[in-house]
Image (spheres, rainbow, N blue to C red):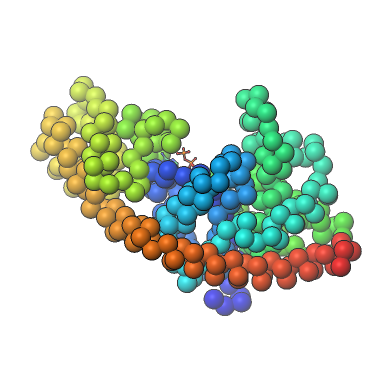
Length: 319
Ligand code: ADP
Ligand code: TRP
């Protein structure tokens, strides 16, 4: 990695049970962006953000490992990425506190995520309210140039930019660089087994790391409508892994034979995901690989963020 390389920072929450909608809709594009080699990437598991909803130690540990294994399995190369856990790098929470002191409540009350939670009349915890400040710290510590996120996270990048500007202005410094968001190219929404958007909250998913049996069960449960020319919900998933040309032939020569088409889809999905699943199993069998990746990542991230914090502490007058 050369020093002139632009810096990419992104966090992934370990709120798992990943499905093929996540893979085709986000993970695949993310991994290929990182693979391009244009950026120096800092990728971390946002476990302290997830603590707002996962409040069970065993679950936190399991989901953290699962998300690391998932990203490694789909092709993130740990030699080219600084991959770490947010909680392993104390600068994130330290800087978050400093940002809290220069941030007003009305400003945070304008955050979409907060307003949505309010509208649902939830009892909102302070961590959820404060979410954008921890995220600003995540980003600004590493001088991020770009932050790849989904559309729903765009406002959080604005918060990071505002906070960088405000800090620089108050403390008469230029310590923090203003990051840009990078919205990943949209793919069509992947439908679930019931034809609605595939989502873990709808119970209509095809799991990303499904065994052959789980795959078969999920595909067989795809809702088919006997009135149309072809089973649209089966076709829409098939289209993700085979060309439309191939599918036209297959679907017209098996018109009306939903069972046969579903069996082909099972076969195709099984083949498509076999290498990813094999890699995942390998990581599961040897836990030392994940431990090593996270330890190496934490060491590098600590060094970079600590250097930044020294400047920050000096600028605010605590050192
Ligand atoms: P879920 O709806 O299962 O809770 P998330 O909201 O955690 O999924 O989604 C994480 C990422 O995966 C988002 O960037 C989202 O755009 C993408 N994604 C999730 N479901 C789909 C889908 N059915 N089709 C396309 N992309 C999806
Ligand atoms: N809020 C992001 C999400 O829900 C996760 C995240 C935390 C993040 N910190 C980040 C993303 C910093 C990009 C940069 O998906």
